[in-house]
Every structure is written in C-alpha cells, then in structure tokens.
Length: 508
Image (tube, one colour):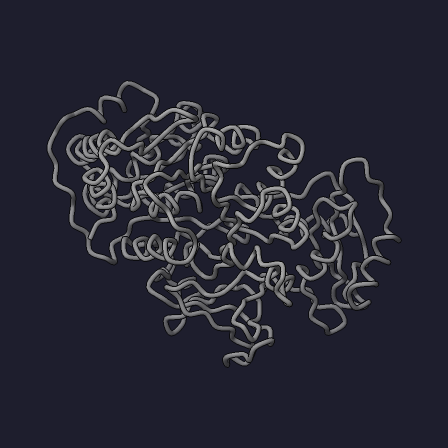
C-alpha cells in the first residue's frame, strides 16, 4: 500500500482536471502532475541514489512543487520530513540531523542562508534549472509497494517545551486520516478546491490527501503564505473552496471581510483548529461568513483526527446548549476512541475533568529515535495527549487547557481557558492569554496578558469587575499586563512558556 496511489487513480479518472494551481491559474492537470511526480521519483532513485525508507526534507513556504515532491518521495518509497520554513536555521538544522534526511528541497529565497549553515546536507533548489531537469527525465519507474506501517510523514512537533519530537506517521495512518475527513469533516467533489493558506508543513498539508482522493483542485496562493486580501480574492476565482485556518487567521480574515464585503459564493467550508477558538470569535465569524465553519481537534500524534464539531452543530443556534457546544471541540471522529482519564488513572465520569486519551488506527505509534518519550506518551495503546477536558452527557468534549498550563492557586485548580473565554467577551479586548506566576502566599497567581482593540484604553478595574460578574473571585486575574501582541509560534499558537519566562525576570 502506497498513498501515492491516490494520485495515480486521480490521473486515471480525471487526467485533464486541474490538480495544482497558483493563484487563479492552473499549473498542472492530474495527468501532467502525475508525469512530473513519476519523473522526479525516478531522479530521486537513480540520480540521487535514494533507497526506500530514506528521508527527504522539504523546507520552503507553500509552493506548487511542495506537492510534487511529496508524492514523488512516496512514489519512490521515501519518507517526507516537512519543516516549517519560518523556523530558525538552527531549528531546521536540528530536524535535518535528527531525521537523518539525505536531501533537502528548498526554494531560492531560503537557499543562501541554509547553505551557509548546512554545508553537509545536499540542498536542491526547486527554482533552479537542475530541479527542472529532474522533473523531465522521461524515465520509467514502478511505484514502490509499501507496507501499511512504513513511515510516510515524519512530522516534528512545535517544540514549545524543549526539543521538537519527530512523530512517525505511516501510510496507513494517512489513509485512515484522509478517509475520516471525507466521513466526518466535509464532502468533496472533483469540482471543488482547497486553498492552502496555512502551511503545507502542518495541517493544511494533511488535507491535501482527501482532495486528491476526490480529484479536486489544490490552490497555492501566489504569495506562498496567508494574506487575507489575497485569500478573499481567490475565493472569487474558484468554486467549492475549502481552507484549513488557525483561529488567528480566521480573526484577520473576519476583520477584513467586515470592511470589504466581498462576495462569498465560492466559499464552501472553513475548517479551523490548532488552537483555542473563543466563543465570541466564532460567533463573530458566523455573523460575517455564515454557516461555513467546521472545527477539528487533533495533534501531530493523531493528525487532525481526535474530534470534530460539524458545520450543522456550529450553525444550530436554536439548541438549548448551543453556547456550551460552541465552546467544545465536538464529538470523537469515526476512526478513534476518546476517553477522559482522572488523576487516579481510572476513566472519568461525564462532567469530570481529566486528561484526554485517544486510540485508533489513525493514531501514530511513537516518536522517531526517542524511546523514553514514546513510552511516556503511549501506554496500553492509548495516546496520552496532555490536554485536559471533560465529556458532557451528549458526548461533546470540552477542552480546558494543556496540563502544563494548569494554574494552582491556594490549592485550587484554575484553567486559563475559562478566564480567557470570559475576558474575550469584553469589547475592548482583541487577544488574551493567562498564565500562572509564582506567589509565596498562594503558590501561583493568575496573570492576564491583554492585547486591546484598536483605540481602546487600559482599565484594570473595569476588567476586574467584568470577571467578578462572570467567574469565581479566586479565578480572576490578580494582575494584568497590557501588551502590543502575544508571542506565537509559526503555526499561530500562543507561546505561554515564553510568557512564563518573561514573568520570571519581569514579575507583575
């Protein structure tokens, strides 16, 4: 079994359909993409002397050749190592060395800096003549047959708490994940389009698979990145548009759409995940974009496939528990079992908070060359996610926080997400993140880092009263720090570790 078969079948079914487009123009049909992939696979095998099981890294912004390289590597029996191009060169160096990548494909914009640092790694610039020659060899090669448990995608975690770990995602994991998307997340037809506005090195790249299964078009923004104005323009050019976006991206898109009022007939679905979407933010998005949203919750270890909050439920504002459901991450996806484990190690009853555990054929089996971390994270076939939450009586999972973000003050557990939801309802607040600060009296005190809306002024007393009207007194922030922006990683997640480190040297 080789997931490159997805592309072969699409070529056989719809050879002349658009497969990859840049901006508003088709670049490859399914026939021309398949031929390009086959030629590159031959070059990888015969010219680069790569063997099945070898790792091939990709370090570049979203680029049409990203998709070609992935399928060519799989075609040749190789494993792909996607690396976010916005990472520091030392982080990239670590991932290349740790993965043992033989080749690293880059774009010309990154090649110069990488060459200075990575002299021992063979780089291939996808914008140069050499690469073009590699994709036009016209040499026959058979697709390598792979075992289901063969490594396809070596995904490195964001590394917010130490060195990144390489999640080993197999061909079988990816097949199950793609089919789960079609069952639980969204329907796709050959006439539809996915715009890769988020990094292909992350969640958006995982969603290329179900779209190839359905022979749909994949669009790379000409800028190679998320630009709200460019995305709204692309929606005018394509039909049945789907996107995967982080909540911070949706917020920027909503702000622009409020001003531009662009036609949205071409937009079908926006899938969001990768960080908390606060209730006020999704309500605002629904007001501006209509019932087009689906939420997913997943991790690299269970890629994009733990729970789903379907479009119909997000849009059902008549339900008596609508707000509670909107604050949840939905119900388990079809390919997994999900349970809550309490502190005593036993399954928790509905409504009881504990750690989220996941099991199923889409869940990966461990970390690359890290036995200790693997044993700590996978136990008795269950993935211990490190996320804290609870199930309600209807089977909806609500996430409270990451276990490492829990604040214990005066012996009481305080979950930052609960406070953040309250503060995000305040009209003067644009973004907020709450963390714990050491306190001799209480153990920890809650500190809220607040980004205000444009032209709004600071008023700690008003915010304190706002919280006291909505949550218990002991949960409210003890201190407020007003900042211009929150530190985030390259996928848009707030770096609470950075905020805690800042407080150590700059206590509130």
